[in-house]
Amino acid sequence: MRTLFLISIAIVLFTAGCKKEDEWQTVSITGNYTNTPDPAGGFFTLTLPDGTTFQSPKKYFVSGSDNVVGTIDAAKSTLTVESITPSTRFLGFDLVYHIVIYNSDGDQVHFNGTAQSYADFTGIGWVHYTDGTGKFEGISGWEDFTLTTNPLTGVHTIVATGEATYLK
Image (tube, rainbow, N blue to C red; front, top):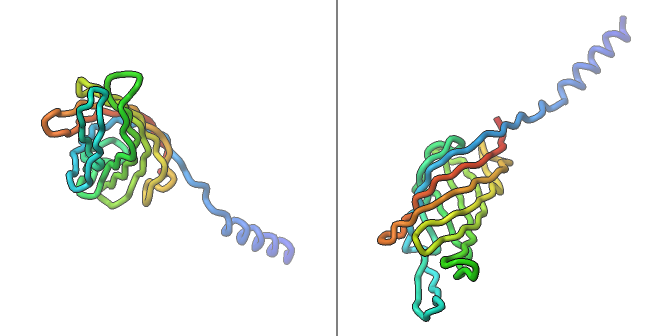
């Protein structure tokens, strides 16, 4: 009887020390975003092949929503352009950037991305989730998007689809 009691205690102690495995979910993403230039972030100055110069914002405020983050906190969420170069493959620009978006609870999602912006004020791009905080800690995934740029304001209107894996 004493042996059975000790085995029972050992089982209880063993199972109490086991951590429940994290439950991950993978979901399809659909989102609509707006990137608004932040003039305080500065500008890139590019010289085009015909000698004219062009300025492009280095920083944007991000707003909008998707079915993973929900409504984006536009006061905190930013896109920072790391580089912009005239394309040698098409009439437009190649961009590399980093995005940090916040939800209403202050949880963050981090992305790295590349895009192509065309002379007709349209473009395409790709982002990969690199990290997150709070509910999005450990997030991974991607989004593809199309964009339209307002030539008077520089505001980008974006429609995205993709996939994300994060904790339930």
